[in-house]
Length: 193
Length: 193
DNA sequence: GCTAATTAAGAACGATTGTTCTGTAATGTC
DNA sequence: GACATTACAGAACAATCGTTCTTAATTAGC
Image (cartoon, rainbow over all chains, first blue to last red; front, side, top):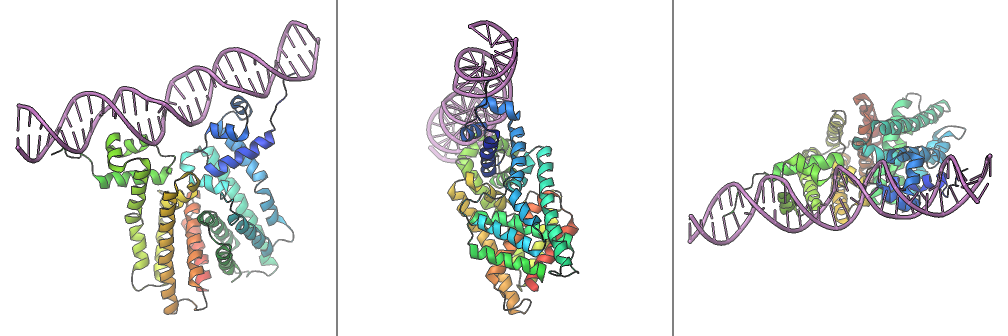
């Protein structure tokens, strides 16, 4: 039997994801990845086929770790406005933490022109999944009377996605927590009315 | 006296700006720029010093042409909610035009980690200028009774910027005009309340 | 028509890109 | 302990990166 691997795939994905997250796909070089992960160049190609394969693995890893607990916030029963507020508060904490790199999915969307359609489809799918979680919370909020039944939850979910994607940009301009909280209150005002 | 230039600086900036706009600073190569503009490599360095110099000239060109007429919408007297609505409608037209590349300033903000601080400062300044134009419209709207005097125009301006930056991301996911209009109406609802 | 100045065209620089290849070290089975 | 298999380490690949240099073309003033 062969020689044992000296690396942990999990750890490699953790580190590589952070690099892609910060630098984007095109602006991340194999050297960047090798230096950051400590993984041998040959092992990298053996494990992930090529740079794109590693990136796809990183996106998968990202949605299963970095955004997983965020999605869990939106799934916590009983569903309602509380989930959405908790989600946004978490994002504001992140945006003002000093270690803000935005959202890997949003960052990737910005450079979509340069990427393979396979990547873009996966990113879109994940963003769509996120929207659907908002939608479920909004429908529940409508049922329990937190928001008016005259509202269209599809529209409100799109609206929330737009706001949160905007937040991933605003977060890069060093905003104050107070300012982001105010934006959040205004945003929620449109939903609660 | 010397040989006459065969290129128009204006046209070169026009074309180069489009390339940077679509590809981002780091992902645009000198070859990309030479091929697109037809400008000689040596002339390019002679005129703009280097890639960063050209980019800075392009940002300047961008705010003086591409966003100029947008800013003019926000300055058209009498100021009020009408200016803001007209601005957003214009952005929605753009986002659904099929030739959407987002906003050069927003795109640049996403890759700010990789850029010289000089660039980031200029981009921030321009975005801040845009916010101030919103602010002026909101203050006017308050004076003419379009929005409540209990609102904080500073907060609303931040809120609008967040929404519009979000729109520059949402626009990359091929949204329908109907969906964007609905998002706009929801956004404006929070302001007019 | 010579000189000086500035342009255009593109070769050339070393460094870096993503990827592949070569050689060696390590390990379980026979 | 030899064998097959796989990982490691890093050299090597052609291509491209941003930048600089060389050479020739063009023009205005003398």
